[in-house]
Length: 356
Image (cartoon, rainbow, N blue to C red):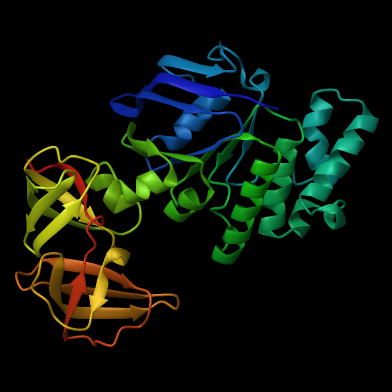
């Protein structure tokens, strides 16, 4: 079922603590929007307000053009998938999935047909008569998702659904959730503190920090064009340093002076000040076998290297002590303690907020 969800200036305060401060964003029909942020940033409280378990102090939650602020949870046409699965331990898989249909007084024949369809879609056909205690963590999560989906809610709400799974299972269930969401065009809000989960699954990410939206955008925008130091540091790894910036002769180009050296930078985002924080991602630096002193080249003394299989992570420092993090595709020829030269492409540097 198609649906659009809108939050308008949602505010929620617990004593002196703001769980949400004038939060506004849209979830388009069939879109998966992830609320991402550190513990205590307000993401689960937002999800509970959408579901109706917590009331906002002010603002509007609008579903398909109508405010649902005053509706109780059972009348909101939302379905929640919990971190703990919340399966009924005394009911088998079929009866767990059918529970919502029974509450809605759907005829038994229709219940059975709907449950059978969802069992097939979720790959749970052979588990239909098992009790929750007989299922693996991944299977329990699938049952929880099936139970939520079967009532055909307007909006699916996921509260850290993969946090209880081991790393390998988390990856496969993550893929399954995304495929199901796309196949059934489910309008979904997904809460997680895991950056890789958010980047790989989302149509849009809303990054929260202390009850505020720090940035909202596509995964690519959030990763490659972070709005500030918090985003750059929280999403993936980043090298963040101070810089003096001046316009170059060519439009859209800047000369950037840092403790690491000088850089010639192409950027569609204008710097907010001549003295800004800048960042670049560890994977953007390219190893150069022969040392160069030109713009966009820098040399470090290598402090550590860790072979990670698909890449090698390295750290080092420049001659003035600036720390550098690197991520190299192949195992490099240099060793710990040696000097190594790197090239930073013109479009690698991102301008952040002014230095105060």
